Image (cartoon, rainbow, N blue to C red):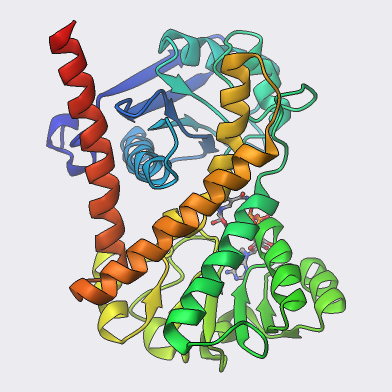
Length: 362
Ligand code: NAD
C-alpha cells in the first residue's frame, strides 16, 4: 500500500521522514493539522517491526492529538513523532540531537514532547538543536509531571458520569481501576478522599501495595478487574481495555479512565452504547495532561511562566465539553465517541475555514 492509499493518511497536512546515518536516527514526524495552531504531540521511541508500522502509528497518533487538542480548546493542532528503535539499547545524546534537527526542519509547525520511550533528559539533547520542545525541566515555563492534572480531569469526569448514570455522588460508589501508575495512583487518592470504594489491579506489585496501603483498596489480579462488581470501570493502564472479550464482563454503567485508546476498535464504542454503558471518550476525559503541557508551550512562546490559573480555567472548560458530549449522546441517542469525534472535527474545520478566509482577505 502506498502512503496515499492509507486511510490513516487522509486529512494529514504532511508527513516528514528523516534518517541520519551517523547516529542511526530513523524518525517520522506526522503533522495532521495546524488549523488551530502549531501541531503538538509527543515523540514515541519504539522498536517497530517495519517502517510501515511506524508510519501507521505516527499517522494514527497525530490525528488523535488534533482531536484531543481541539476538545481541550487549545490553540494547537495535532502532530506526533516516532523514532524507530529500542529505547533501552539504542538511545544516545547524538541521536536526540539529530532528532532535534529533524524537528527544527519542520519549521515550528510541530512541537515535540515526551511519550512512551522518551524522557525529559532525552529532550534536553533535542533542545540543543531546536526551540520547538516542551516538557523540559528547570525553567520558569516548565510544566512538570502532567499526571496530577490528568488525574484531576479524570476524577471530575467520573463524577459527571456517575451523576448522569446513577444520579448520585461518589461517596459509597465502587470504582475498579486498571493500572495504578502515575495517573491511576493520583486518581485513587482523589476517589478515596471523595468516599469511593476502590478495587485496583496492576502488573506491578509495588505500585499496588503503595496504593492499597494509602486508600484501603481491594487488590485483584489483572485478569479479574473486568469482573469486579463496580459501578465504574476506570482503565488507566495501556490501550484496548474495552474489547469484545471484556465488555460483556463489565458490571457497571460507567467506563471512565485516563488511558489512551481505551476502545479496542471503533465498533466496540457502539456496542458499549447499546449495552447502556456511559463511556467518557478517552481523549476528552484525559485532556488535563495536554492542557498542562500547553501551558508550558504558551509560556515559552510569550517568555512568561507556567500559569496554574490558566490550566484550571482550561480544565473546567474541558469538563463542560465532556458534559456536553454526555448530554448530546443522551438527547441524540448516539454513542459518546461519535459525538466527541463530530465536535472535534467541527472545531478543526471551523479553524481551517477561518484561516482560509483570512488568507483570501489578505
Ligand atoms: P504509567 O506507566 O505510570 O502507569 C501505567 C500502569 O499500568 C503501570 O503501573 C503498569 O504497571 C500498569 N499496567 C500495564 N499493563 C497492565 C495490565 N495489563 N493490567 C494492569 N496494569 C497494567 O502510565 P501513566 O502515565 O499513568 O499513563 C496511564 C495511561 O494514561 C496511558 O494509557 C497513558 O497513555 C494515558 N495518559 C497519561 C497521561 C499522563 O498525564 N501521564 C495523560 C493522558 C493519557
